[in-house]
Length: 188
Image 1 (cartoon, helix red, strand yellow):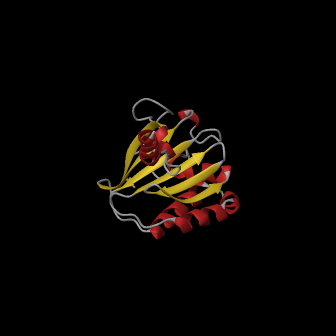
Image 2 (cartoon, rainbow, N blue to C red):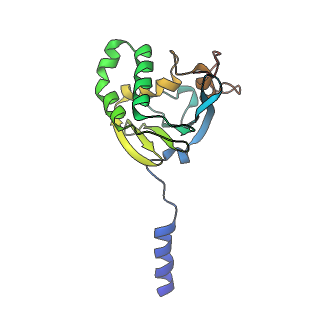
Image 3 (cartoon, rainbow, N blue to C red):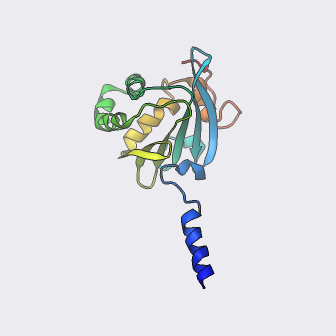
């Protein structure tokens, strides 16, 4: 009987548990790509995961995760500044105003990253929540469908994403899958 208790105790403590901050580990990879600066300085490698329809990856019923593995140091301020600039070119001022509190909240939780760090941005369709995690640690969760579509749009939106080539790679269009490719390069 003592052996059974010992085995059960060991299983409870050492059995791999699903991390709530890393739901992408149970999803299907849609596509991956690299984001570069000046065409040759790799800033991060990106992967898009989903457990739903990759053709409608920004849809409110599709769970999705964007995972970014960094290869250089980027400050929290640089993240916020770049994301704000892209959102301002993608969204009307009225749309920006409606989600400004959510944007400011997420941006306030960014941390500086170094080579080897990983951000994951995940959307859970059941709770309608977007979560940001750094190296598996959840930093913030925001419940808003409009915010989720806008923020994932930085990388995946049809209108002026961060980089068209990266968008195509993430959506699997470079390999003939997913949405139709619209061309573009991988330079920032």
